[in-house]
Amino acid sequence: MEILVCIKRVPTVGGKIAVTPDGQEVDTRASGFSISPHEECAVEEAVQITERDGGSVSVLTLGPEAAIEQLRGALALGAHRAVLLETDGREFGPIATAAAIAAEVRAHPYDLVLLGNEAADTGDYQVGVRLAHELGWPVATGIKSLAVSPDGVVARREYRGVEEAYSLPLPAVVTVKEGINLPRYPSLPGRLRAKRAAVDRSSPAFGAEGLRKQALRVPESSQQQAEVLGEGVDAVPSLVRVLEEWGVLS
Amino acid sequence: MTALVLVELDGGEPADASLRALTLARSLGDVNAVVFADAVPQDTLGRYGVTDAYVIETSALDGYAPQAWARVLAGLATETGANAVLAAGTDRGNEVLAHLGAITGLPMAANCTLVTPDEGRTHRLVRHRWAGLLLEDAVMEAPVALFTVATDSVAAVSAETPSSVQVHAHKPELAEADLVVQAVESPAGTGGASLATARVVVGGGRGVGGPDGFAPLEELAGLLGGVVGVSRVVTSEGWRPHKQQVGQTGTKITPELYLACGISGAIQHIAGCAGAKHIVAINTDPGAPILAHADYAVIGDLHQVIPALIEALRARRTP
Image (tube, rainbow over all chains, first blue to last red; front, side, top):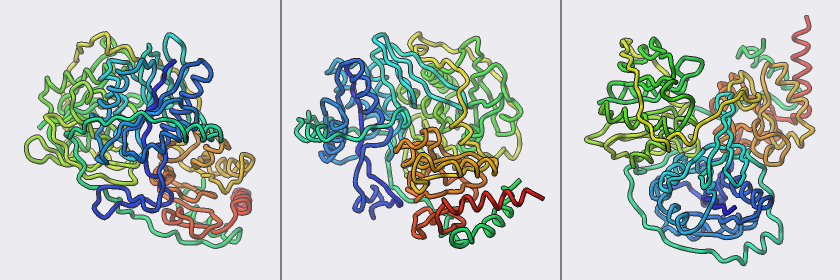
């Protein structure tokens, strides 16, 4: 099974999220970057499949040169080959992103392409579906369980308390959600191999799209600093009174 | 101006998220609805200002098939001359509109909170990034605007004057390729769904200390008629299953009370619990970010505070 996993470099946000003064980006001066969470699980899923059934895992990202850090992170988890679709820093929209990935897929005999259901930052919810249409492949999204056989995949998710199962012939595109597995920590030999690995590079063309970002902002919050009811068990009577006032005690 | 809205049903009635989409659609012009079912919830659609409802009966298309649903929307959008096609920002809504975008080559904006028609083919919109932790102001230029409506931002409000709904049975033209991917449904175990709709959620984070520390939280949740939710670190460590995770990559909750115990309040967690009506934090650290999102806080060790709270609630029950 030849699998391509598409990942994205996104800021690691901790307790706070802020925007740069020009309103165009998340302020990352005080944060690092990581693989968008759903996609880290996509890498793990692909590695598990090839460990069981053979084959290889290629990992791809579309982003600036710095995104090689996330490619190496995926290699350390067990991916075999890395592909950087290098941008000049401009934010590619979902249509251009899907087209750029499709070109890579057409050039290699992949059986399965895995993506995250949505990127943590832009949350466009569409790159996987657009990619499938570009390729003429079937697609399932938001998947929490995946069973692969030579004939195809059975992909499952839950919706409004109902389990949905989708049977897809291969080749196919599947977008997954965190929870499909528990990603491993990279091993030391994995990290060393990742450090030395070559990265295939190309530079896809940027295309302007009909949906254009003007600015990002932090929503005005009605929240304020919590009122402290007290310390330790001494605060419990006040806490019970508050819960009574709110009517949450039956 | 005409807006075409995919209306999802929940027990025969429009889903709450779809009512929000209908509310937003009314600000764009006449509202037409598309329903995949044998029976149309005509009264509710009328109250939300729908003038025409297109019903795709199960004899024409049985079950959920995302690409087929998108093909139906594409056909109806052309037939009705729609200027915009909307769906709720649910798993299905986002998926179907992504297919519609791919079929038509049009841009699609996911999880919008505000859409304003501008000149010509332009719409100005506000949409979620980072699961709503950030807002994006954007411009969409397209002959037909495709967007989904955030499920937790626009309030569902019925129209000032209800409309009478014309129901049209629609027979879609589908290709075989549209039906390759179809959902086979079966009842799922409990878990994610009950977390999403629970009245009370008792949250546990790193401060719980390990997989064995959750028994008091379970007991407290039981006393309050609620369920246990956890932060991402808890599921990443494998202490609890992922279906209990509250957050951007887990479940978004909307309880009356969220009791966050030993949770620092990473922004990814806040994205999941910001919909709670009341938040109380129990934390040893008075500087924890969760306090900036909570109504009240108890500064202390959850391993002492929770048993004491359980005892107090028990005593209150005993006459």
